[in-house]
Length: 70
Image 1 (tube, rainbow, N blue to C red):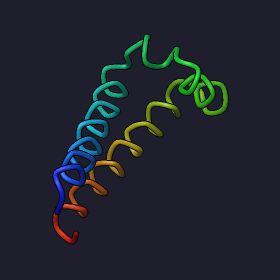
Image 2 (image 1 turned 90 degrees about the vertical axis):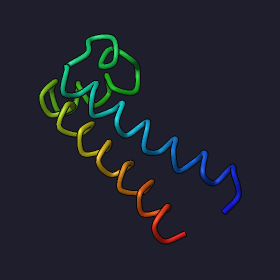
Image 3 (image 1 turned 90 degrees about the horizontal axis):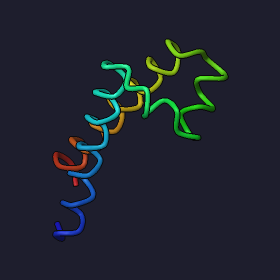
Image 4 (image 1 turned 30 degrees about the vertical axis):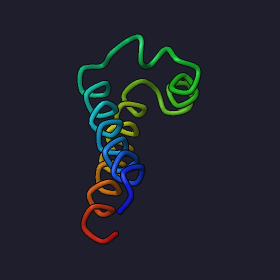
């Protein structure tokens, strides 16, 4: 694997962890961004938090799967 591929996979894992941390700790500044505000409007704050936890888990799973199978 190229170093850039390692970087991308590590980035997926870090961003996934960040998404989970922001959702678990209910960070106001994270949920007031324009991207997150769309999900807050559509699903409510609790639903957006669940969405971002699931998104974080998916990003982490993709990063780990990339390390295992690439």
